[in-house]
Length: 318
Image 1 (cartoon, rainbow, N blue to C red):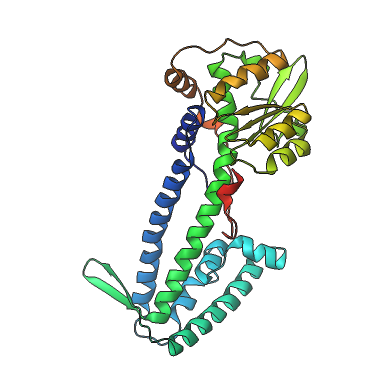
Image 2 (cartoon, rainbow, N blue to C red):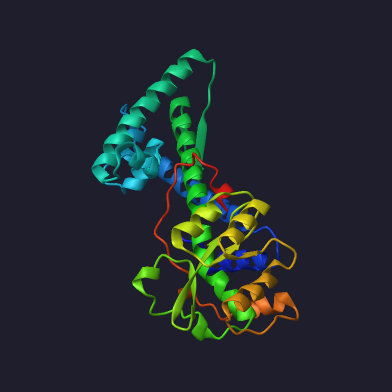
């Protein structure tokens, strides 16, 4: 899954203005989830309608069909791909099918037992035009569990993807605001050793690694990320005093965007690196829009679909 260029640019606008960007990701999660709900209920409706006159488990037959993509099979059974990979150390389709069917059967048995014990009745009725289907309590709880799992997967994946897709265009925007000559941050012909680096400057033939983390205060990941990649520059949404002390001790130049006029500290980074620039004065919003207008879709990286089992509060990393 990828975040659209529009959302990426909205996140950058909020970061540079010292505002919280998270609502942009939340809005995207909501939009993706609601779209999924419509598509999933359509599939459930069609499957139930097709199998109304048979007694077999239509959900298992139709929505765990081995011809479906493995990610769909996992989600429909109430599992995520990451969970399966963690359980079996691999996520091949054969493994996913076996794990999904086993989990679905166990889940169905649990729900069946629960409905016998509890005096509870739940029915979902799905209507399309004049046609409708009604799911009994077992079928309804299976469907409810599936959409809950999908929400968790979307949530974890989009929080992770947001940080990755914003890193490079955020740094480009800062460079454009401070009118840094492009030869000091080349975007092409990247050496293989720097493929995984968030951003880098080039000064006197030396590549200067930069790390970007859209994390919350007090997150210990900051120092770990810098050490792991030997970064000279660190740009973050928020930093605790402990984070700042750690970075100062390691002689790492840092920028905290959430601080008042936090983006202005980027000039101190450029001074320390002896990279030419023009001090920023004027209307920040105008400067941001001018900078963003020069960032092409190609400069917003495309990522493969990210899945997560939702067991962590992913946004706490940012």
